[in-house]
Image (tube, rainbow, N blue to C red; front, side, top):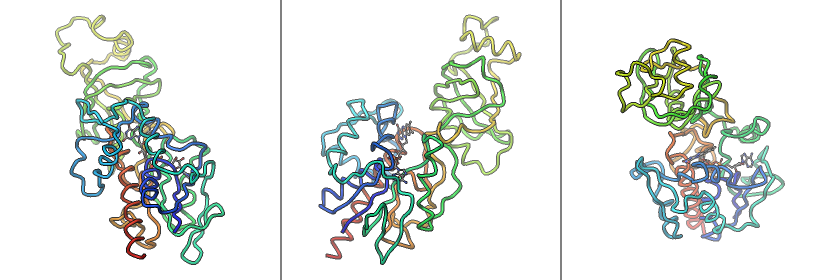
Length: 351
Ligand SMILES: Cc1cc2nc3c(=O)[nH]c(=O)nc-3n(C[C@H](O)[C@H](O)[C@H](O)COP(=O)(O)OP(=O)(O)OC[C@H]3O[C@@H](n4cnc5c(N)ncnc54)[C@H](O)[C@@H]3O)c2cc1C
């Protein structure tokens, strides 16, 4: 049996590591000239791989990921916010670990899959015939515009539709002109409002850009923004230095950064009433994940496609996404482990 894996990212690599362990033959088709690019980029090169809130998930078996790391002596450390990173503080260690568990001769680089044909219960892709497919091509997040069509294009040949996709975990373009604030990084309590109702609030560092806002807390806001059914004048309210009372100061000139001081003076704003109206999210290239993907209703609990049990779909290609904090990567890895395990178990039953 030969398994064709489309995409050498978190999901594809973890799946391949299981197949390798059970001596099931596979080929990884990777569109770019390297694998695991997003693993390397994750967590600013540190790989935020897990979160303490994930222990009790029903959909994803995170134990498969945690046990794999433990068995291979790759310890994790947790920060104050429950985010887990490798002790090495380096994404490369994680990628190297996965690479050590798969056969590099089974990776075909620079092989974008554009079409898959089903022929007599087998699948033809890039001139190879495989018995089972694992679709793990991720999403168009952080991918340059010219290459975005490749990621989902081949799904059409398998009659697999996507739900509506949107950039997520990204910044916002604002209606206010933020040029004066460009480059400012500041801690604040950020609240997202829609239809004048508070949707969510969270504290963190905000990075100001010339056309809007970014930073982890803002990226999380984009996650909640994407879940809104109807947009009615959405805006962000920012309270800077939330644990410090600035109201007693006659002048804020030396209490806050100069560019912020100039901004509030120019637009005659109250420092405790800083509102930024959302024009849109940033584009796909500037996002970390995508909201939307292959509809979860098309998928069975083992991540196989209901209408064709020889096709498995996992990772970010599926219509799930989470806030920042290690949720996305750990889910993609866990999907891959689960798919590999399911392929092996079914194979054993048939032989
Ligand atoms: C800058 C950045 C930082 C991030 N940081 C974190 C973090 O710290 N923690 C966290 O939890 N998540 C983080 N994420 C999100 C996380 O990286 C992804 O959710 C995760 O990598 C998804 O795994 P995947 O295997 O589904 O897809 P990917 O890892 O994207 O892998 C898909 C692979 O398929 C290939 N491919 C695409 N189309 C085709 C095709 N047609 N044919 C062949 N190959 C194809 C791609 O080139 C890629 O190698 C970050 C994302 C970005 C962009």
